[in-house]
Length: 92
Image 1 (spheres, rainbow, N blue to C red):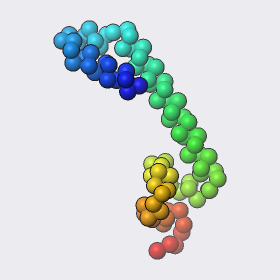
Image 2: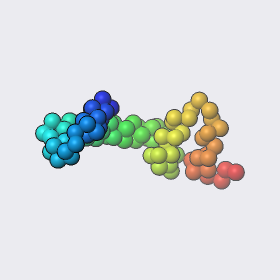
Image 3: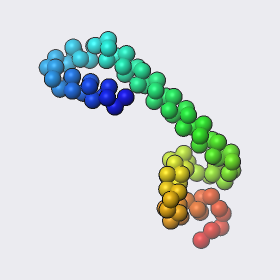
């Protein structure tokens, strides 16, 4: 996806006629494939987060963004402190 993006942005920089680039059938197909890939990634991420929430029900109190931040900061537990109040009641 990144290589497609770089190739297409470079083409847009060099081509002086915007409509030539914007109406390209190849560009349209590449962007459609990239959108399909992004949709697949989003679905798989949603499944993963749902699995984590199912395994530990208190995680349902967190948004997906908050859960991703927690999962990405597992090496340093201090980064999770901000979310403990949402997970566990009456914790100060």
